[in-house]
Length: 233
Image (cartoon, rainbow, N blue to C red; front, side, top):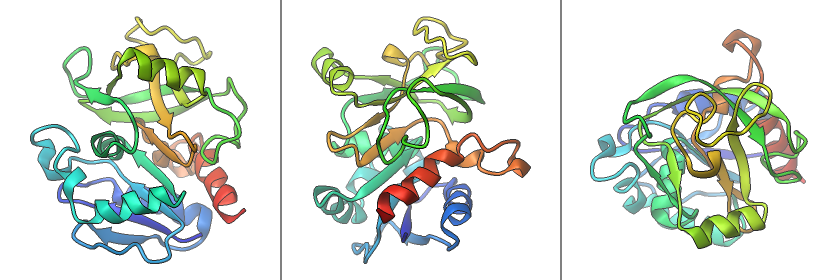
């Protein structure tokens, strides 16, 4: 599987993502600077975390207009696999590749901590190594991770099984109004969503930071293992 990581001014999690991808593919992913316009024969595009363009205007708003985004939109239209994590999720919503928006955290503070995610969608390229209802630990680090969308969009996401992950407690209990289990206040405790064809996933927490025992655990590893299997298949 040939993976590419898109790097914008202010991106700072590309190396973390590269470690995770090399761990499961055996080869280093290609780093693509945002001024480029050709993805080549890439199988998977990853938009990593950070603060693209310093998060001026809105998080991801300026990155959404970078030259590389035209190629990414074309890649998406052809059914390509795309993963956006943290700032990458924000960029995907700003481009319209995923619906909704990421607002300031409910407590108006930057959060850097572990959280627990409950798997909601089965048999997708990003989740098929888990079962529905599985819970895993993952770090989060963001100031604007409060997911929201209009009622019609939320009904479609919920009704069509496009919610990939929800914030939960360690036992898998989901309580949207509980700051302990839903730290940023996201509507319906939504931590990650999928496109209609389920080949694009955006999520706020960082599964790439738990893929090896030396990192403190391998909770995020199934996501990347599943992606390799899905893309190769």
